[in-house]
Length: 432
Image (cartoon, rainbow, N blue to C red; front, side):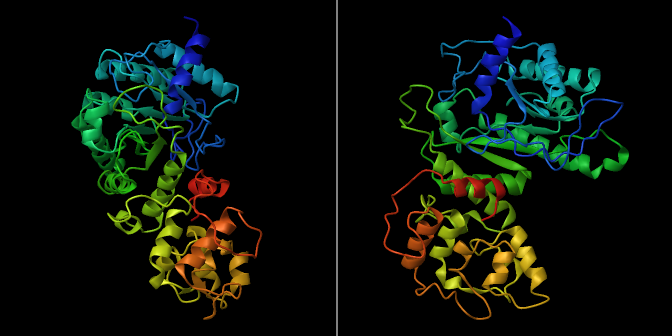
């Protein structure tokens, strides 16, 4: 098969795999090689759904041994199949890089013959790039669940980032939709990678090769099974705390197969995916816990308000907060105040007391924040009620442009269930 036919098939097969939002790597050019990995990230282009598209994103092969019910590449599907050689992937990467099409490689694969055999092919590919072409750019590879630790060691010193897909939020779901995969085959290598990264960082003085310097990530499918947002968020929280993951990626379930165990969805649950990403920011950078954002009585996120606004409305007894006296972590809990603006507030109020005009100049999103704060002891003059109903109604109106300002009236919360442009921006920037 012609290499360009393979490229068309295997690039298309990789589109359901979430890649990465930034490299997080400091790999520098050595021995007059090609490319650099940079800590500020290589993801300069974004798809309409917010995913990064700046990497050459490929499956090595879509000839899979497994029959996962949700996967387009399942062995029982009748689709065009193709497999690269290690040399072909290496040559494609270098040629695309030289043409300035890409800045790095994201390489995954279906399971060919066995997990170990597939890993050996990935290692051969990246070895050619690193050792023969001296490619020093960013490489993210997917570890094949069930492979040996020796192969993880070999791959880990060649790449910047490794990831293993959890795929589904629970063991029961894994048994239902991917019976050939085992929980231990996923969790054990993730734990091994996390421990090896930690040991490698502690022994840097011994000049050992960097092992996965940009850390590890994972991905799980949202909407293929019945788990609530609470269960998914608790799982993510555990992964961050126990395995020190860099990111958990959430992929809205896309219906590509017919099966009695799969849901019938008219479209992928993109809004749900969006809300989980927003909550993920709150877990990692804002000091929130999963049990604060959701609970058994409230197990799923609000369709029309982001998780931070939703939490604030359910905890209105904690507001309003005086902007000139609140500590940094309290400021972070105010809707419309992100990490950068909270730090600016702390610095600015050393010089003078802040009012609403000053907050606007500091970059605070006042259309959200004004409902939850006071400045110099005064509430915003445009707001005449401090009730959940009033605040929720007007947050929806202003954020979704459903009414001209400053007129306020009762709105239906079911006017729209798709992510808005602002939802997507919050998702990408984490400015909640």
